[in-house]
Image (tube, rainbow, N blue to C red; front, side):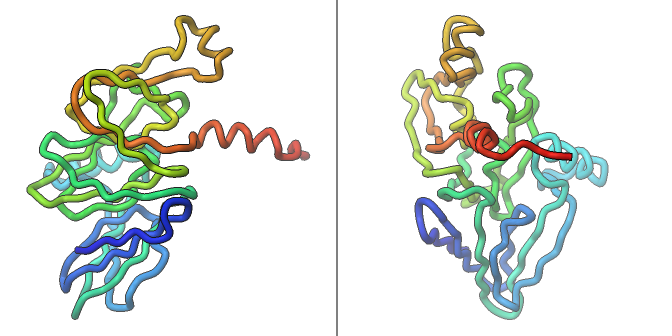
Length: 235
């Protein structure tokens, strides 16, 4: 599999080239175009770790809690190589991330596609994963074997940061991070009133050594700003 990112960073599109009989897992709605020899099948979104039918249902239901689709599309090249064009629903950049041995965590709206050896599981983190309107659930990303990758999208540009001890990131700008990092979600300022008045709300405080991917725009804040510009609804 070869993945080339085009039109970066504002309107990025991925061109994925698959070898004969090679498959790629894609989030519904992400496909822009494909070669005619690609066969698409739609199945219940689940991890690749087994567990039978009940395990698949539980895994797929967990994806619903993260805001992802209950189903997932698999594209397979038949009779020769094939190309697949993919795009994120929001305007912005995309990045390929090799899944490390310890795994990754990511916010739910960022997943676009992955190789077939990647497992996606909804993870309930309690109050610490309350991402200011993004829900109580994250996506836990692990890999079955080496050379597994995920394709992630952002709102605006995407930047990789290195956490060497401690780093504070606004929750609305988080995309993904190494699962080796510890984190907790706290108020941006000393108290709730001060946090509200500052316009910052919640931040994620990371501890440890690892990578963090952030997006340059906050979709929640953009939605709030856009909503103020829209005419009022009429019955």
